[in-house]
Structures are given as C-alpha cells and as structure tokens.
Length: 271
Image (tube, rainbow, N blue to C red; front, side, top):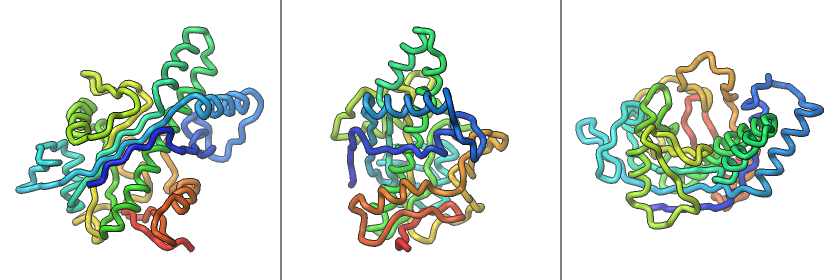
C-alpha cells in the first residue's frame, strides 16, 4: 500500500486562484499597493515556508452499507455517500499543510499593527493549501490509474454541513497506519479545527473506471458545495499549471490526470 511524504512540496499558486481568494472579480488586474502586497506575500512564503503533503493508501469495505476504512468504522454521511456510491475499493488518506511559519508570521504581523500584510499572507497561505490538495489529487489519480482505478471527489470534514469535529477521527485514522513522522506537528483541536490552521486533511476514494453507481453532473471542484452564494467559487477548469507539472513528474509516458464534466478523474493522453 502506498505511503508517501513530500516536504517543501513544489506548489505554484496560480495568480487567478490567488486573486479569487483575495475577493477580486475574474479578470481583475492588480496594480499599485495591491500588486506590491500580493508579490510580497508570495515571495515570503517561497523563501520561508516548508509546505508538505502526506498520502497513505487504505482499504475500504462497506458491508451492509457500513463504511470501514482500514477495518475501522468511519461513516460520516457525506463520505459514506461518496465511497459507497462510487463503489470505492481503496482510499487515499491525505494531509497537507503550508507549514507553521506562515501562521506564526501572520500572527506577528497582526500584533505589529500591519493588517494589510497580515491579510495578504493569510490568503496566500490558504491558496497554498488549496494548491497542495489539488496536486495531491492529481498525483493520486495518476498512481491509481496504474491499477485501473479512478479517484472520486475528495471529502474533508466540514464540507456541505458535515461535522468539522469528524476531523479528530479522520486524523486518528491517518496516523494509525503511518510509518513516517510528519515534518511538523499537526494538531486537531477539540473543536475539529487544525493547528496550524493552513492545513487540510481529506479522503479520496479509489474506484473502478465505471465511476459512481449514481451521481449528478459535477462540472467543477466546487460543484458539490451547497453554499450557492459563495463569492469564492472556483472555476470548473483544472489549473494548467498542475497539468504541466504532473506531465513532467514521472507519470506514465503521455498521460496526465484530467478532470471530466461529470466530476470523475481519469488519466488521459496529452494532446
């Protein structure tokens, strides 16, 4: 079963994604002070942070609709819906983090009365986490394809009204079979919030190529979200930067992960 840990993961946040999280409309071109702060935050993270990605493969069983991961019952309704609906045979348990330095320096900026720098650094840290998780998904898809599997949309506690406190159980599950120490301590508070907060844990189901038993069209990474009025909703397209990096990162010759309109992820030939 796969277990991998990447420290200082090569995450390159797309400008459009960063501007989206900053709250600017599509097509906005920053200038002046905004451009200065955006570049500063990107450069600071690049020079001072150690982003990391941890992935561990796990078994999935669902006898009688009771979901078990690595033999342990874990059945938040949204996760059960995804894994059972897709007929998942295995799962990839994932933890990603932008690193403690980002959060610690942002807190220092706030205390020093530098709210502008604090805000841009906080937002860029969030963008790094989104990027790390997206790249982890692409990597998982590429590895799964070697066994004739595809990756289902990922689940993280707190999605679509699910209980964020489930992160305690999910993190315990991630750690239960872990053989490699994480580069930094990742804590789950009683509330379910993570520390450092610029982190995320997730489950990707791995299913046969036929896809889900039943599913509605899912045109993009935010399609399953019930918060329809969200101003930060992502574009249906998968960032080209991720596609380029995966194509040159040791994946099978002529193959990269590609998102499909129905939400499934396959490995497709590069045009």
